[in-house]
Length: 228
Length: 90
Image 1 (cartoon, helix red, strand yellow):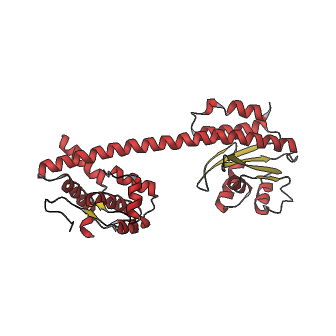
Image 2 (image 1 turned 135 degrees about the vertical axis):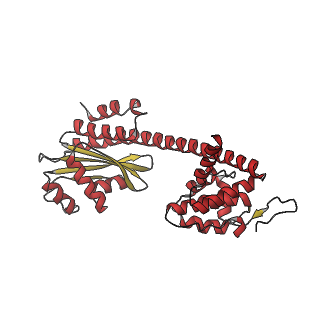
Image 3 (image 1 turned 45 degrees about the vertical axis):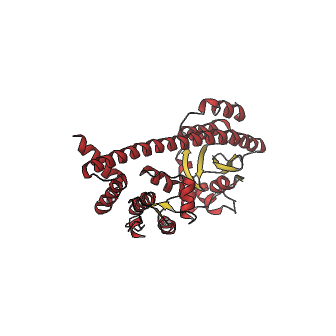
């Protein structure tokens, strides 16, 4: 199965409503299945320059990725941040990423490939491929990886945008509920104290500051207490 | 004391600088700060919050108090006390 075709089918419209975590797992799993010489894969999703969500096909990738995130340096992070392609054909002779390559070699990794996931003007994350059987990735594998990364980036960007939008909607819903509760609490205070809405709000502020409880919690107690 | 006209209606206050100083102590982004202010019943737009913090407009005392309380609650979240003055303290 061609990696491009597989990625297109598996990450296409059907994945549009999947949670980000599931899309990430799918990308990692597909990379391992369809790109020759990949024994383990991981995918990193970046947000504000920091790795946010990660999916792995196995413990080897977990170990190698987490080490990089702790150190803030490594081919996966660099590829994810810069959107570049970083190939380590032989972990025993690597010089640029010497520390990483030594650890990887000790874990049995012979060669690695890290590819940024490009979207319009930036990158959304990185794809990391680990091989343990000696043969470095050849040009056709690299070409497939670049194509695969293109599809994966679109799927991930869509899933992440949907997740952000859902977060925002959930936040707005909570905000509207809180506003309504505060309005009700003000109404109760105005009735009981024959005061204005402004004065009622300042009473809530004062109660909040005196008790160090959030104003919304004070308002909720007041509204619930009155309902009994 | 909050400045009020003869009918007891509160008037605008120039508390943007004090609010901006408090905002700098929080870990909130401008968008989140506005969302917290809105959640507590604030009626003014995100753009007007930006303008108030920049010192380019005055705000009704009540709106100032809603925003300062939202920021004070954010300071509590960071383990700090209420540091943002209310309109009556300006």
